[in-house]
Image (cartoon, one colour):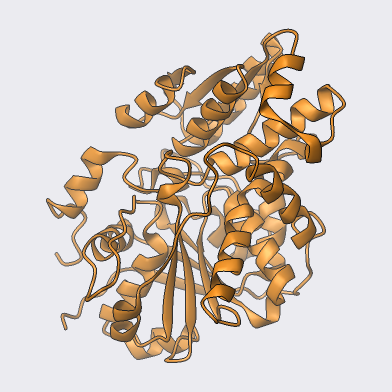
Length: 399
């Protein structure tokens, strides 16, 4: 086995208090999943068992929730956008979300609405998809440096897509200003003062994937995972999913690790300081979906109260995860994972090859009894870059 050292900064969450958020409970998640089950083509995404890899890494089980197979969109994000848009329409037309029907709402809407959002790629694609399903308009703004393939995915769904010359967080502010001037509805997965209702719905929508995973874990005859690794940008997915898992299993019984790129590690820095810390600048990480510098206060509250640890890592950790998932051991299934999707598994692989492996395993509480859940949040949403990493070896693990 080769030994190499990738940068992994691991911080214990000294703010942990185990308080369950009333916003992201099992009850709220069941409501969101019931909505998603009404969408044509809905089916739970696979929970993949990587038993050969688990044996190599010295843990009991590695379970990968593969969101690359969500509604043919190659990412999980539509779970939040569709649910939030449906809730908005229900509110506007005085309907109950439990009685929501795509056909019914299409026939009810008198004039088209425009939904606006900022995205690094996957969230905007989800909003564009939802708007098209409902016969509405979508305008999607993307930060500078966005891959053309991600832009094309959004344009192909009939939305307008504009790439700005600003970073993600500044683009969000511009989107809010433009939408207000033009009377559009903003569907954003981050929150700020006066804007919490829609991001709450989005986070509740994301938790559908966790409810599926809990059900699938039970079907495998496993009582519960001991660990979950959750990647974070603004912390909306991590917060929504951890809020639900903490409610189901109890936060004291789940070792939860929040993982970020070192170039955009606002949650990690917030955990170290004990309050929200923003990261500015361009944040040129390969994990485009996580290149966000300002934590979602709703997500941060859950992570502050219930996460066990925070990790900030270099980009090569994500690249390693992509290569490991795409080149399985033994009879393990092959998983195509994009940069943001692979970083959780990448941490496990980086620990395995690290010269201080035993120390890091102990710090993360990993052993032969561990059942580790990771979320592959996206597939190869930028195929060109995926091949550069997996085929051509960019972002290598050794110098």
